[in-house]
Image (cartoon, rainbow, N blue to C red; front, side, top):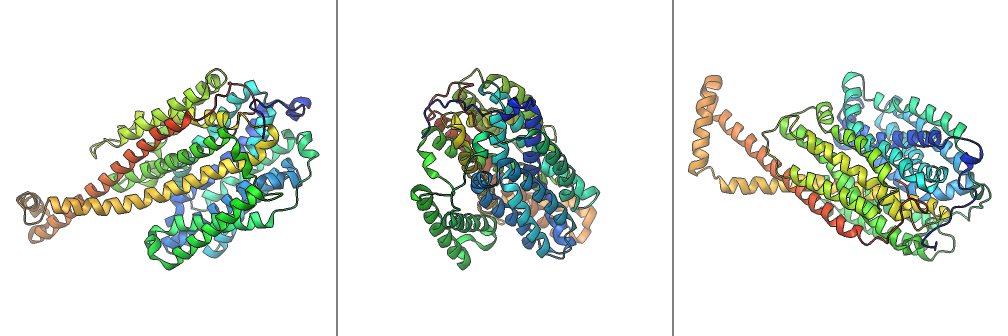
Length: 528
């Protein structure tokens, strides 16, 4: 295990030795990461259009997301071995090329079956982009400038999930769902050009010899990650453990996870070395990024749904309303880039999580009587607070690791964030359904049809609708009251979720102080 203060290797910055401006490297790797993160969310708003175009049901179309997430998550922790085996620059360029070509194939797919095949390939190509990009970025800057570099990198990562639904809705409404995939092609070509020109492997990568491929570790990784993603994506549709196949998949996931943990801790040459979790800061960082993945991805999904389902906004309009989060992140990145080398990351993390907690708590106190501008400032502040989490959490988590450990650590770190995000989305979707039903039952019992409150509301609504429906006003009045009941039930479900997310954010504040102190600007500071 590395010492508390890792020393800088002499070959840590091959770019400096070649006279290359490291900010060009930052732009190159940010393009690749931005493209991959954008694609995770951009396809979600196009699912109904994909289903209609390819003669599939909405349930079948959701496999477009599931297939991508499974292959993406499997490659994430394995990226370090591939970079050692084939060279990091070569492997990164191969992944970008695979991702770009498969994006074109996804857009041109004539059937759902072929689209799913190409999405699996696309996810495999995209899985390694984030951990490889961060490792390259970190080694291209001296420690005192890594905070600013990570702020620029995190800018793309924070903005991409917010921009994805908005851009996806615009492309789908204005052109076709296929352009949600075609948009990756120019970005991928530009990323390939810049990576080829500005990125070079350090000496320890060139001289490294990859160990024998860990077939057991990789196989068990495929089993437990694949089963977990399928259960999370499809569990709500089949009433979770009420379905036999979910129980079998859960058993396979537990067995696969147990084999993976054993092989990764005690295997001679594991694909993912979990012994790195003995470093306290990295362990705390993994727990925090998992919890933060739950919180941020849940918010990214739930807030647009609030506008769409309760206020009748289109996907594109809902995306525009929540877009100020990206603007807040843009405002926060220069600030965090400056402060990251001067302030203890634990204080910055505390500020970020507290800000996120109070804004989500505010979301939990709103009413349906709001305009598109009502939540502008809270959403903007949310984005500003997020910028105070992405960079410091990496500074603290990676601050006690050596550069040689970052490749293995970054894959595991990103996997924890992705799994947290998948669990957050699944739990939020399940809670929306279950709590809406529970709230509807509670409201029905509170306002029984035989009660005076319901009768008064029915008569006033019927009288109002008589002008429009005549003799059918009674039926229209009942339908109207039922729709209002469903709307109120869904509203309370959203409110509960926002409050739970707020509580989760405040819990993260406590976890932050389990970090050992890392001196700002010293040692390898982490990655997104």
